[in-house]
Length: 354
Image (cartoon, rainbow, N blue to C red; front, side, top):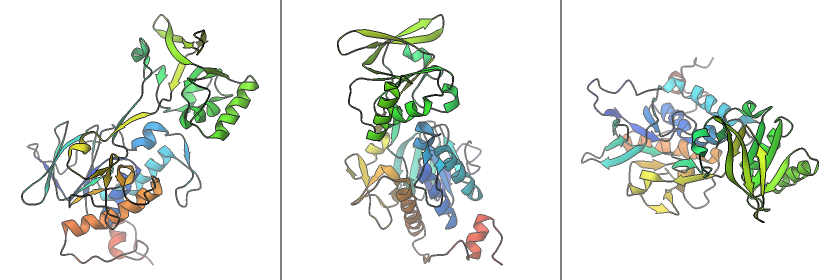
């Protein structure tokens, strides 16, 4: 997806009613809620594809708390949201980080990305999740040359690990979840964690220890110290134990689950009120301390905040009404229902009710 059709041939700023910063599930649902109100938007994300943390961290993992969907894969959720917002023709600007927001004398906002895209926006919704984030990397000599093909920080396709000699490093839920997923599917499997205690769910840890006791996987307490390289390929890792002894593990693939470096990045410099590195909002419109700038999803905070996708969907709905009121203060707001409203159904491109 490239730039919106609204961009001028001369490369001028795109004029829009709203810029959404962040194309995760909550940002995508905001496109839908704005669209129902007849408000078109442009959406910007630093990642090269929609989905945010869902597709970046756990695309194959199931989600069980999306209303009316007993189980839904993270990537499936994003695919469904993309299908749902298709009638509203939002402009997507991916692989671009918003680096500047400035209010103009007329009350609108100048928004710019590091890649040079510019927007003339009446309002802004920040749906940036935890902000820009990068995985904590495996810091051993020559690791960088194998990243993306033999050393991974996320699982894009679980099948790629099947039938292979696999080492998983880490002690959180992600590491344990993938160990349990790969057990019996990988040719060989080892889990390396720097201490005996784990941050993961106790049930997952207990199951892992049971599988290790049965000889179905290896569990080593230690840290990966170096790589074994044969020719141009990664052939194994050396693990340093607490007693200074070492163990060599042959492997073709390493999955390092060390977590993320979440950073607000440029958002922190936009002059918005913060509390514990999150944007303070009201709970009527989810507006920040700056009129016309709203924040939804994990990036915001308010009394009783719960970092759940379904909570973010609720926030997106109310923020959309907040945007409508800000952009068109003279317009009377009233609630319409997609099941019965001819205007809503027309915007969605579906047939009127019988």
